[in-house]
Every structure is written in C-alpha cells, then in structure tokens.
Image (cartoon, rainbow, N blue to C red; front, side, top):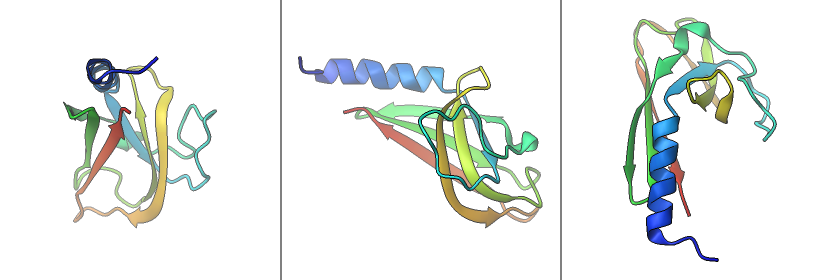
Length: 112
C-alpha cells in the first residue's frame, strides 16, 4: 500500500492538532523511543506551541521569553499533547539562558 499525498496531509494535520505543549530541560542523555519525560525538566519553561502545517511539514514554534528559565542551561526539548507524556524529545548543545536572552525554537516533522 502507498500512502497518498492526501493521506500524508491528513496525518500531518492530525499531528499538528495534537501536539500543543513544549518544555525545555537540562538533560543530556540521548533520547530513546521509550522516553516519556524530559530527563531534567525546567518547570518554568512549559509553554503552548504555535503550530503550522505546509507541504506535509508540521512546524512547532516554542519561545523562551526573557523572563523564562533564567539561570539554566537549556539542553533538551520535548513536545507533548495535553498529557505530560512526551511525543518527542531532542537533545542539543547547551544554551545558557539569562534574562537578556530570548530563545525561539522551530521544530519540524516531515510526514513521508
């Protein structure tokens, strides 16, 4: 069976509608498919995402404002539905967060 363009579009839209939250943390362990939470979540970083879909690409924008997560080294990101269990987790090079820095993350999924 072949997943047709319309099917890809439907799946991308469904993912975009279900993923509504993002959170950052200080974890550094590589993500595993069995992960359900961030390794070291920062409670003040839990935010709603702004989602868009175009050409079967789901884009999730997540912003840490100058007032969010100050004094932490941001090294992991997670996306989730309304439940606390993660749908995806990313580990990145640590970014030192301070009150003079706003960080905008753009996370994308391509439905193939």
